[in-house]
Image 1 (tube, one colour):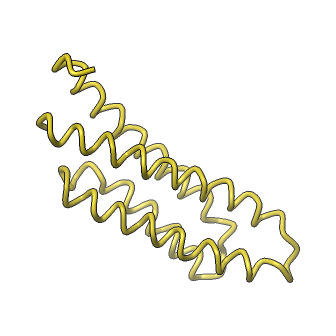
Image 2 (tube, one colour):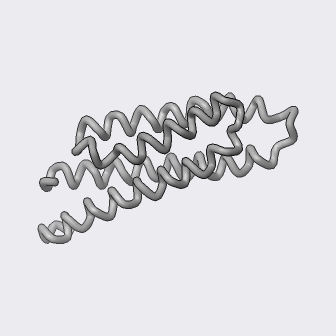
Amino acid sequence: MDTKEAILAFSQSEKAKAGLLMVSQLLEIYNGLPDHERHAGERFLRPLIAMIASEIHLSKKMTPADLWTPVDKSLNTALVMMNSGVLSEATYHVVQAISAVTTIGQRAMQHLINQKLL
């Protein structure tokens, strides 16, 4: 990873992490909703997760794509869970995506520290 890629990876990882943390919290709220209110929660979560997935795809184009493969895989699995009607099972995969995004940010930050840019 070169310096430009590290800057972009760090920036994108922070943006993705913020969105994924929001989704994680909203999934916890969703899991506590009564059955008759869950449809409204799904209508809110579905586009939010899709928006974050779009950001991940953009990140794959801006930085080394292999960095984002675990994030993409976890987020896609969360979407499959949601589309299969088991949104409550998506939380695990969102947490996996958060972990992968955090690792990207740490690697990028370490590169910038090594270059004495941070």
